[in-house]
Image: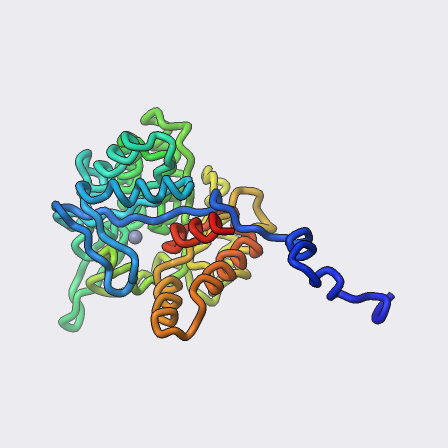
Length: 333
Ligand SMILES: [Zn+2]
């Protein structure tokens, strides 16, 4: 059968029919709102490259969390801006670290709001890399190698301290080999065998992270992250990365960034049966914001289309700086 017996427009002719046959529907339960917590007092600073996204100190954080909860968003993802940085990122795993303190506060205010702790070192190291670095000078320039296995021990300490503070989910993002296994064993040994790991399984060395590095003050001071984050050109490598994490005990798999990697999301979704997380990253956010501020695009329509596209590509969970906006628009609907 074909035209004129077949007419695709029959199922598009009214709102009622379109609603009935819609295949993908965004839900507030899909959303995670990232939050940047900074040391200090009275901090409520907008990040210049991410309009609408702020640094909060612990004493200004409550209204933001109140709003997130009121909108029905089920989870937040915490990043920390510490007072001091050093070569091993020791404030990442300090008991009174900024992420640990924020976690305790949020869980005290809202025990049911899920706190996801980003587990990495780059916000806490003075060199801005995600692990321990062996530095050397060559041709008058600083260079460094990120040391895999020694970094794992620091990551485990960080994850355990975050779980102790009350984090519901540990989200390791540093792309060291074996990081999921090391953290799983570390959490289990510390009595946190019930705490799931949301692994940044497939994380590309992406230019889309640019605004985040201002937000988290985590730009590498030398070199880049290409020896541990993935080459944007590679898809089969994503399968190998994801498979390792599955075998090491990951409970959820993430693909980061999202927009330029929808094919990777679909591939991972089809290949593995763990929940899939998409990270709609800072550069994706800032591009939309910048164009919307110029009046060049319809922000609401674009954001809803992007997030729906990510879900259609396989995402069960979407981490996005638009979470509050999206939740508000969903309420209007
Ligand atoms: Zn990192």
